[in-house]
Length: 393
Image 1: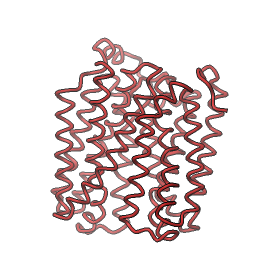
Image 2: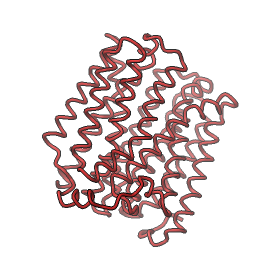
Image 3: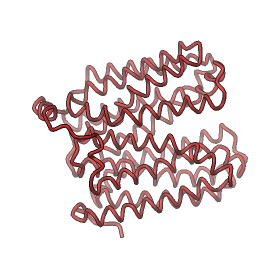
Image 4: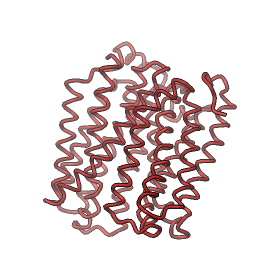
């Protein structure tokens, strides 16, 4: 399928997937509480989804290398639809857990397979642009989803889940009828008969450093997301509505960066330079967050962080799919797994650091950013031949 035709379809697919996912975010705590969940059980309910993603993303990525991207994307979206409808019909807490587990196992196919599809259809030169566009669709979905969920939850706490399920069915039909397979039958046959290697074979060599770098980035981001509401209330007295606007502004800035700037900058400087630029801006953002004292400074400083973060993930994805010896699906699946690991560990770690001292999640975020920058320097020294464009000094 031509890049110009496929990328808008993939953008729409991931946007709709993330809108569906985002719809349930503001509702889930109240819905689970209504079914008798304690705060600990709510934490487990949120964590079990990421845990399933951690284990199953590499599996689905690898399967997509063998049987094709389209059927695996359809499996992932079908899993989301089933899990949303099951959650909407849940009458007890165990049913909610079952729905989250099913959703986590099957929807783990979505992100790595879509990124692998982008890697299949883009040239090395335009890979960063393609990954950025997918990143932008994810960011925009997370902006619109919670807003929709908040509006429809006023009618009933069940309604947002059914709307999310309907959104997933629409996405499934879009993939079924409009998206074409990116791997030829010859490529699939070749991948099927390839010597079976461990999923973790992609961690061999210098590329392993990039996975750890991405884990550091996600770990610090998840810690921020888990604690910022408390921090902003303590420092600036921000209420939930104001926080929603702050995160919306940050999300829009990140989406603009990923959809517009990442492609241009990676084409001009190379992924390595953009990764380093993103890490530096993120570190500055973490430091500025400590100075928040009102709504305006919260919006500006969090947006600085969001812009930096928006540079990193698409560029890491692009660089990995260019340099890893594993298939595109195996590579992006393992990267999604490291993201999930960060999202599992980040919130409780951020919460614990916040309980020790309010600024600690953001100080540790800045430190993790600097460690990620050092990791990239190590990677660059081990892979000097990969620096094909102007390095960022």
